[in-house]
Image (cartoon, rainbow, N blue to C red; front, side, top):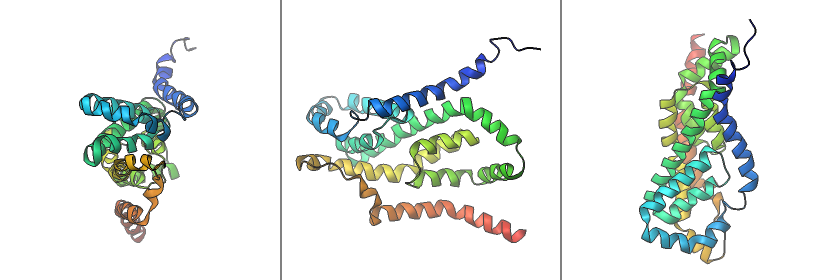
Length: 243
């Protein structure tokens, strides 16, 4: 029988959230590039500090909401937002707010992708055999370690680390807690930079985000990457010995 014109509509609607995110991400990368920047923060820092002193709770809620939108729609300015968290709220509170907002935003992308394209790809992945099937089984056997690894490795773009797990069918619960834990080291670094942001602005300079790549910073993070990858390596080596 021929499908009626409206029969595929529910399937198309499932893809709408992810399509919306991608469209806003592309538009925002051009339209907001000059607004979500350190120059904007520099120009408004006195007003932000004054508002913080009078309305701390409101500013914290607004900051988290804005950061969630930035992450959920993959807008430019996530690094600026993380540094701003340290500038406005200090190291401890800033790190907590940064991790909270980034985790919520990441989960929004995951859910949108899983509801649409991820559901289709995951079903095909489950039905696949051969090499694709072995990759599927390997990912599921090492799901938590792989999720932690892609969060800890600084070279993995945050958007990719949010989208890829949804497309290969990982469990949402594992995605949630590994995201919250895995982004803590990087969040501490960026928040730490923000704590001293006022002095940087007073000198007429721009924050140096390359601090992440300093040996005393990147070293411990890479050490955590090794710990996350170690169980995968051990299982692979054991599997080869059994063959």
